[in-house]
Length: 465
Image (cartoon, rainbow, N blue to C red; front, side, top):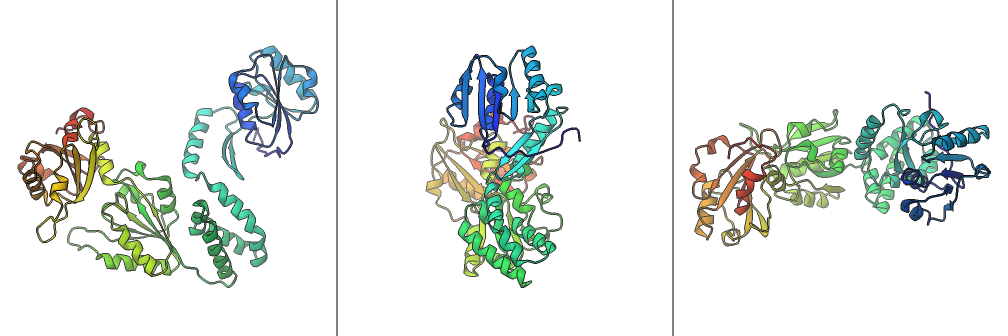
């Protein structure tokens, strides 16, 4: 390594910045995240530096650099536009044994500032030695998306209990296994969500169980997998999927999303496939209870959002009855995904000032809905699971007041590359010649906003309507 990574204690660390333009402002802003005491010297001071200098950590001097400015400092940043002055300061600071960084001039840097991900007390620093700054920025973006913003709470929590774990578990291996289970499980989730009291209770129970070599009870996470495109998963959903012991999933979870689940997790399919009946909801509820009581981290992975026609409420009612801890992670519901990717805004001030979601699921060959409330002007109606009942939906909406010419769209496999959009009217859609090409999962969108599909269809610009 040309550059050896070090973390310097900045408590009362005296630093000097020569220059007060926007480049210097970036360095000052970075130093103000530490506990350093910063002196800034420059004949001209930009507005950003002047604003930052209101901090008690900063001493601002509007004048040219003087050699005496190097007295009693340990770290120097040089950020002026005068190359000769930069070289002069570098030579003098180096002769005094100071750490000096001439911004954007690597040969004159005794140290370089890394790319930082700040989750204090957890701090991650990365460097390419100045050779690949764009690649470094790309890597930082990736890590930022994977590391929870509130992981700092987990660092503080770990520090508080470190000695107690050390006194309770004799071997280094036992302590390592214990901390891995804490950081990769529901205790960590409770901490990052701010549930400190519950986290401490679980931690104490887990530590006592570890000391006696006992198993602790697991937890269930109801996770919305979104409409199909893996890029639409929330960061939290992805994190939980990658730490799950068991994943219970349905048919609306795309194979691409399932690929993101932890490789060695047990995957349990509870959806419907050809020649296989749907697993009864009561059986699904019992599966969640069973796996959690065996000490597993259980992810119940649902297409769309767990609380929008996902029966998530029924599942957590059972978990509450059994005294099992759970969390709910919302996802992008299918209606939002289908509308966005089909170029059909669900609301639009010229077409719809309200939107309503309904289930078109047939029961005893009927769809028992409040048709007058659905057949309202200037409203968008979205029907989930309505493909089989399409003729009834169209008939009832016309019967209860919507014009037969009202636009309607069927969106199949929304947000994926298998997406298809078929548009028509309430009058002609049941007999549309291409209707047979649309297969579940598909949503029905009804209302004037559908007329915007051809104009706004960004995802499939060549798709015929």
